[in-house]
Length: 262
Image (cartoon, rainbow, N blue to C red; front, side, top):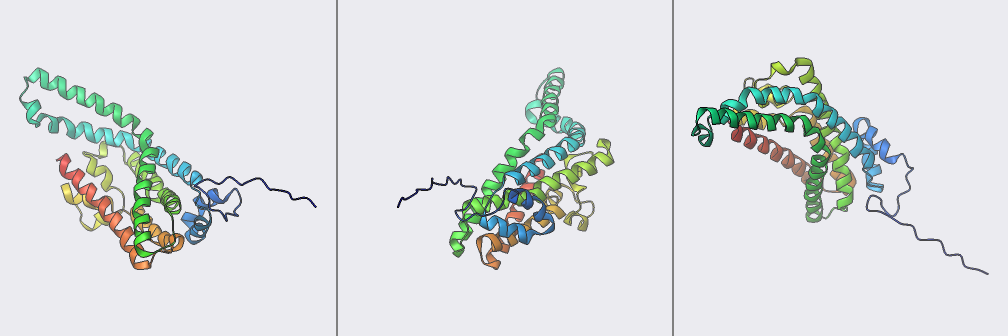
């Protein structure tokens, strides 16, 4: 009688020990998060893979960023010179130095606007990291049975909606309307359907707060709440409160950004 020792199975943090899904599980999540999120959540609970979701969300976001860049650049070129001229440090310079300084800043701005798309995947990863940390803390506080890996995969997958499709649709709308339609950056964000329609003509801090409360971010908030319940068994009240708080914080950052830009 001989004993055969099976070689150890190497596992990564992207999978669970009992994972028995086929290789297409991650790709299926990309589709299911849109048409059958419950099925996607069940799959993420068993095997928290996120590679395909990250790839698709990144490609959608990059495409949206490229489409959006001309509108953002036009808006900045329309508003930035006056803002810079009002800066005390620049206003104190002789007229020729003022023009030179403003031209230099505009040149840098054009360069940054043309390469913004490069940073989209990094922003997506960073956002998912923060969200996963928040959900992991809530999971521990409410005695859920989730893990950081599951919540990170959940955040990346939901990012297909909240980051990928949101960026793409905004870029498409901006491209259809044309760059000349936007006088400032707030006007670019305002074209996305959302709660901003309840306050027509909103400007400044209020516009900055309302802009992130668009249909895609609200959709993503709902998916995050449902995902925390299904993937991590977090109590419903805590899941909805956490998802709502994260959306509120996003809107608050938008308000702060709008206030600083004035």
